[in-house]
Image (cartoon, rainbow, N blue to C red; front, top):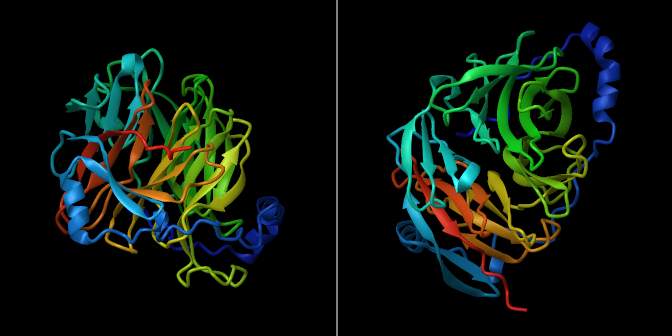
Length: 399
């Protein structure tokens, strides 16, 4: 689902600008006039190998391997790949680890479950209250889900994010709390994710579109330390950002991958795409999400924007992102970092081929450091999206 980052703006009156001027100063503080320079690694031709032809990518989609480009060579990396149960219209792909090695994948109205690391799956109907919500599973098996109002997220003084608890794997649910959004006027809001930290802290990401005082779209973060009953915030994550995810690194920091999207401005650097930004960015937090720093681009190609991270115990991080407008055909690709996201390797994994569109790919890391990625793709223009569970490990370069 492609949530547009260009909603209609609500223009404030002169009187309202007088009232909110102090708030504008706070929001603008520390915000760079122009973004950092493009990353040293260009993402149009990683691995010094041309993007594979369409027929080659179609074979990849039908097979059980990734294509891996590194040091001028293109090779195959075997993977384990199975199609998830579901029906037409059941998209989604959110994934969460549960106790005892269980794995859950959320589709629109279904939940899929695996107890053997993603090799085999069952599915069942999830509670209608939880439909489409972001969820995580606590250590005792309690499932926490966040959903938004059934009003397309339009602003009102009562705008809230609803928090639900399920003790039977999402089959039934009860509401346990809510996240009250700012009363300052904005046009609409969208919930964009839920993260569970190792100490049980929950982080919920909510984007406010068309914030009147700043004339920006801002991604906010709320924190709960009591299993979702009460929430603190908002804490600003970044402007103009939406889809992505957050992982904790072995060093103890948090790393966020974010879709950064806005039009081009006069202050942007000359190399900025004429269409502006629709790229994958990174940001870091050293205080469990209370504050964020070092917002920077990861991809350099317009349309490489959906991307979610997974990190292994040795600090190897992968981010599977989509490529919408080339180079090459549409599909998902994975970038790799061997130092917890500080630098990124000149290599790429071709993960999937899609005829039209793809859902964001979400990944978790299993106990043995196997990465389990949930990847969506269609094989027919405007056709239904199939979800695949893929078990794999990146091939580390020889020392």
